[in-house]
Amino acid sequence: MIRRREFIAGLGGTVAWPLAARGQQPAVPVVGFLNGGSPGGYAPYVKALRQGLEETGYVEGQNMAIEFRWAEGQYDRVPAIATELVRRQVAVIVSNTPAAMAVKAATTTIPIVFTTSLDPVATGLVASLRRPGGNITGVTQLNVEVAPKRLEFAHELVPAATVIAVLVNPTNPSAETELRHLQDAARVLGVQLHVLQANSERNFDTVFATLVQLRAGALVIGTGPFFFSRSEQLGALSLRYRIPTIYQTREFVTAGGLMSYGGSTLDIYRTAGIYAGRILKGEKPADLPVQQATKLDLIINLKTAEALGLKFPLLLLGRADEVIE
Image (tube, rainbow, N blue to C red):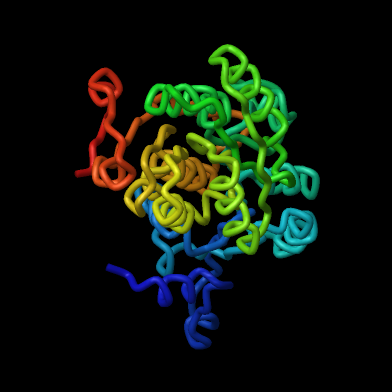
């Protein structure tokens, strides 16, 4: 297993090539990687990206290099980081949202492969899924659209709850759309939805303490790179504060969170790596249809449920794709 500190050190910046090799070997293509989150929480997904690149014949350190850029959840920094990466004249840029929007604004020539939970057509990333056009294509998953399903699962587990909270990052471009979906679902379910906000780790303890004061029956965590990077931390906090919580990633559940429902992010990043490799081989983004990940997994932590004094209904338990005991 790669140690966290060693891995983050490896992600932090430009790949360093030996001086002798620089003089003897031809230049290798460089893949730019721009992400709005933090490196620690993305370690498995960067590994999946490398796997996708290797499947197309590109191995980091041998015939390809990767330059990493992280906004650490500070989305106001993204445009400047995108501009700096474009100036490096990398061969292709892999980026999540909202960083992909900034990269698209910064270049019309460097190929871009995005990963997103948003509708890439509605947000203007591409003209259409089949024919993305221009210099951009990518992979999309339905994590924003299925947010109401997370609320439904939470209500199904705690049917007596009259107040359910949702945690969103107000600086995340998908927050408004996601909240609208959740509010519509809350009205149908007949529950009061209380909105809490956080865009810094400093907010987390206050958020969870507020949940206790509100006597919220459950918590739904919104999507976005900031929370995504902190899945394990949020899972541990939800267990410490004894709040039944649902999020989108498996890592959240393995860290002590109660439930997750969402697409396989590992598959998303592996596919992005394959697309980046195909572009390095000469294919054009405009000719590569946007890939849609449609498989969604419900993962349940029975140990956490027991600690919270909860019992999953058999119907809900039977729908789980994975049960952690």
